[in-house]
Length: 143
Image (cartoon, rainbow, N blue to C red; front, side, top):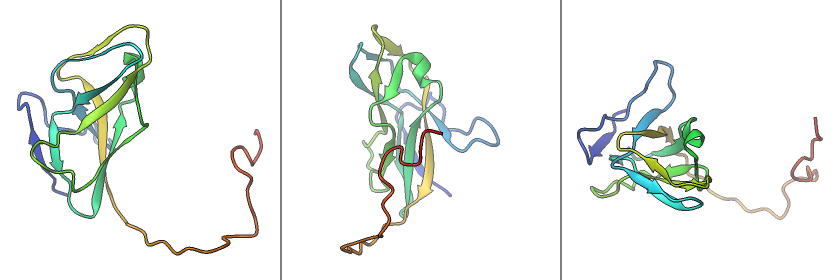
């Protein structure tokens, strides 16, 4: 799949697969970002993308992000195919769970992105789905 990309700072690398078996490309922070203790901040990731129609981007934390004292505020990020303007820079919404400020330096790998196919659904409403209900969280037991 070919994806159009715009880098805001051309001195930073293109998103890249770091190993032959990597499922996602690494994304780099643009500029230094300070995230104060117990605060949310947005880390610019240096790219705007034109994801082909029929696809979407899944933005996830690198597995080492927690070692920096950060976590994604909403778990994951969704990049819609129509979020594709020249100024639509992809950003990572993070929460600093430490007692100190965290500084993310320019060029730090903080996120990964996977492009996946989209299949929009059509709802069909029913009064009942099934006679059997599972019961909710933990309904299959503790082990």
